[in-house]
Amino acid sequence: MHLSVITSLNAADVAPGRRLALAFVVTPKKAMHVYAPGKHDYQVIAVKLDPQPWLKVPPTSYPPSEIYHFKELNEKVETYGKPFTLVQNLTVLATPEAKKALAASPTAKVSGRLEYQACDETVCYAPTKVPFGFTVNVKELDKQ
Image 1 (cartoon, rainbow, N blue to C red):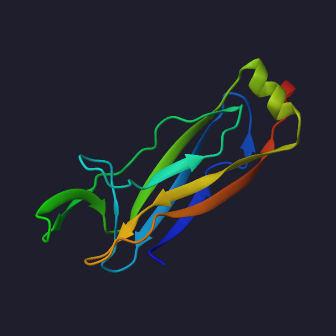
Image 2: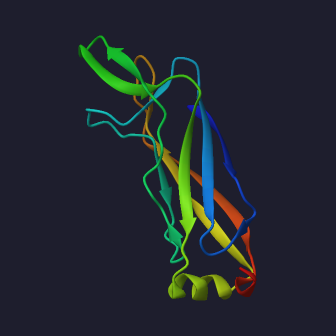
């Protein structure tokens, strides 16, 4: 309703030590914006991953934002009002616990949600959660 999101994962296979990247190509609707990280208390658009014992999740990479001026409040905040891409890098752990978790099934799931609050010139809408999920193949662990 507020934006379109195309989500992709750069690999179909996982193995201990492998790095993955989730990309979220976000296009806000006309006159709509979402909040970027900055010096404000508004809800920043964020990637929230479901915990996996085999996955290390560093902070999300955010592109540069633009400043939106709320004239009524005379407030300037960091936002995204034009198409942008968020990147969430991931590392498949090589710990014994991670290897054991991955060995339990021929596939594994990378899932979560993109959370944001969108606003236009007059209304801030209720916070929204857009779920995503990818099933990846687990490479044979003894062939690393």
